[in-house]
Image (cartoon, rainbow over all chains, first blue to last red; front, side, top):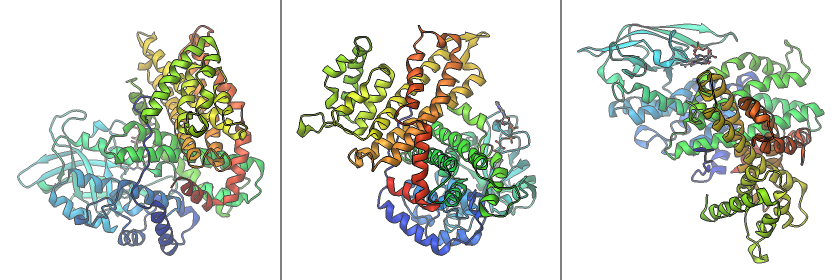
Length: 379
Length: 239
Ligand SMILES: Cc1cc2nc3c(=O)[nH]c(=O)nc-3n(C[C@H](O)[C@H](O)[C@H](O)COP(=O)(O)OP(=O)(O)OC[C@H]3O[C@@H](n4cnc5c(N)ncnc54)[C@H](O)[C@@H]3O)c2cc1C
């Protein structure tokens, strides 16, 4: 398939040693969290854990040392995040800052912004959220209407964001805003880095169907931020966001959200499993193994400085389908009641309820397939 | 791809083109049975990555000829699992061809005044199919890499072979269904070439271990690892 060459995953250094060090560290530091907490763990907020992880050098790994980073290779970082996810570590607090906001600030930010934000991110102490969605702009992201007008004192922001994960626990939001009056679609957009304690910002919780408070709506009411809040180039917001989404879509979190369930199923099955359970374990393993190859190849392409927009979308599409199907397929072969209290039953229930969100967050299934179709030359 | 592999693929394409009308004889005469035989023994000294590349071309050009058994015959008596491994490569090639034909067709066939490929429903189906093709490619590549590391020892690569054959088998349903659906009636004819790859795909799915066979085998192996052990085994196999 054109443009779909497989990139070799070839990190420098001793990867087995890196894994072994992290596994030892995790054995000492991972909170003996409930099994349900270990599923979908990149949505699990634990500031104490993030701080300890940062102190151990596992956050901001690819950032330059002068900003508190580890100057490690992106594929070393990849190995670390897949280990964290496979172990079900509560990485939600620093997740977005480490994955996309930090790299974006490094790439597009001013020296002042880098010095101000990157060291805190690398320490696992400064958290960020993604301000893209608005009530009228979901799949159609170019319909963003929140406005920022340049005045003598700075940027004046008015409007609303929605579905902002972790806004109530974050320090800063990277907001996509319309900086040119009367501009349309993806022209005239810019990104602003806004401290969430700025006067005029109201954050309201939205409780999800699992009963959790992860996402929020955010109101900007004549919010004044300094000129220095603009990140990158005025009017280039769309281009910057597209690059950011590439970072967001290709990672191992797109197929490892339900991993705790597969591990629990294997443990519950024992060494001589029932044939139906054995078959399911075999099928799920084959899919996960393949997804890992795809995800690693995409990470390698990203690390080589190329833009794997289509490959990242393939990982997201297949990964989301896999992790969304898994709880349904497990439910089909194991015998447990909805309200059972055994670990496997509680985990299954939690993931069945969480799983509809997997193919929504980070771009819906239909939008992702549209990107792949474009890659095939159909659009 | 290395220069040597590029040359090998060029040769294979030419030979298979001839074989498409003349049968397996040109493939035999070209000496493909020596592909995997070490140079010291008078062979080409190819690795499994080479075999994967050649069989992908065979899966497109001559899916009905016994190219895989011919090449493997050079190794003497081999573990049946190596036949499963070779079949995955054929499947990857055939699936790529089914996708290629489908894209070409929807870009040319017009209905309602535009090419079919401009309709969102058609685009979404082809995106789904492309993901499956891509997955089989990746599984075949990982399997080839492992076989090269362990010197074609099927037992040492049983995890990768099982995973790849199972993943390829799973893709067959989606790939053949979408390819035929977007082609409409023309794809169901003898004259049009889609069936040349879709019928072999249906056949290969049941050969050298069907879904149930490999799912049991892999599932039992993984059950032996335990939940945490699966992740450790996966990373240890690749690092
Ligand atoms: C758990 C979770 C966390 C999130 N976190 C964040 C966050 O931190 N920051 C943030 O900015 N956003 C966040 N989002 C929002 C997410 O990006 C949006 O939900 C998503 O982009 C879809 O927008 P929407 O919900 O408005 O649905 P809509 O755009 O209304 O879409 C509804 C359905 O219609 C389909 N559809 C829409 N347009 C088309 C079309 N042209 N063709 C075919 N089908 C179409 C969609 O694919 C979808 O299936 C989060 C969402 C979830 C579920």
